[in-house]
Length: 288
Image (cartoon, rainbow, N blue to C red):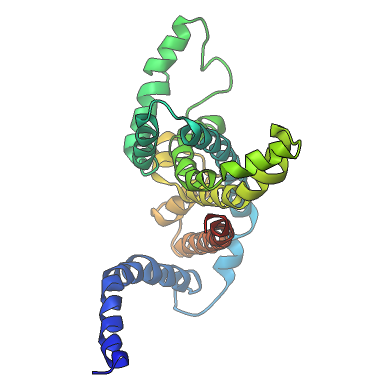
């Protein structure tokens, strides 16, 4: 048989491998997203309207979007700085050899930890009766004597850093590995200092990966729900506000506002992740 005729069935069989993934994507992402937009643009009588969409992006809801965006950007910035420094330390450490494997293995686990287990862990550690809180008090400092609270802005940033920093490490580590030693040597041969190398070579090369990591951590923090729901009742966190509207605590017909808030949240996540993929595709050019 001609070669072209044999390639046809082979190419067709290759697509079967991603059928389960496409089915999962359709059932648990595309269909729910369409359902959210449908419920957000329908009245109780089933008529089409944008009233709920406008209401979801005005007044207190708009303030909640602004606060959540600012808080998510702060949590993402802390994760970018901490994760990048940790990734560079793991990438450049030559001894002991098992250190990098240990760091990456732990990061893979910590980056996927959240919800009730993470909230319980931090309540046991940094709660008012937490172990670390008592150790700090024994050292002479009252952690809760000031404005710190585990459910406050600073406390949630600390909690979110547990999964943001490891996630940033996993995102940035391949980019740091892509920094060729010959680039530093060429910079030194031309009279450049370490600061010159990072300003003109290192940081420009890492910039797409850092920006992509920031956007990924922003989306990760923006959409987190379970951990914040356990630690705080702050209605300015948009994920908790959606739960308030859809939890049956509002008047009849107001649940459409909850779906509209979720629809706006999907739009923001889609924009952030699209920018992340663009930054990632640009960073991939340095690894070829």
